[in-house]
Image (tube, rainbow, N blue to C red; front, top):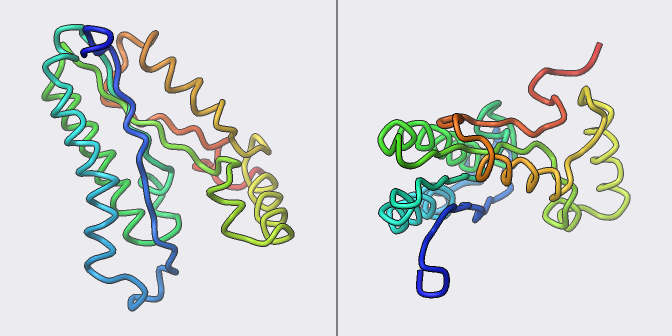
Length: 179
């Protein structure tokens, strides 16, 4: 506000996870859930709350970066999946509550080819992971950060009648394996 005098858009892009197989119920503690929810859900809520009056004045827009995990219940851990599902539900609830002055949407990426994934594996394991994804999704490609940014920019600047949506940017992962 001090620098620009207004807030036109807010992108909530903070997110954390803990890798834990869903079958391993001992792998996640209550503290793990609290940590993930604190960042992935509560942090986004607090940012929206802090910016709401300024966004109302400018008839601004919020984009929450979620995940296909919150839609399809797949991903790095049950805590991550649950936190992203909660973020999606919060997006819809706040879109209703803050309309018509503020539009709120979520972008739900599938695999984004970044260090976040590549650092998790050895080089060969990551190559295999990426190839498997690309052979599984209908559009045969992982997303790039630029693909996600393009959707975010559209929602912030051009999608004046879009609110309460979760936009899946997953190369069709949600559709299942191509026939």
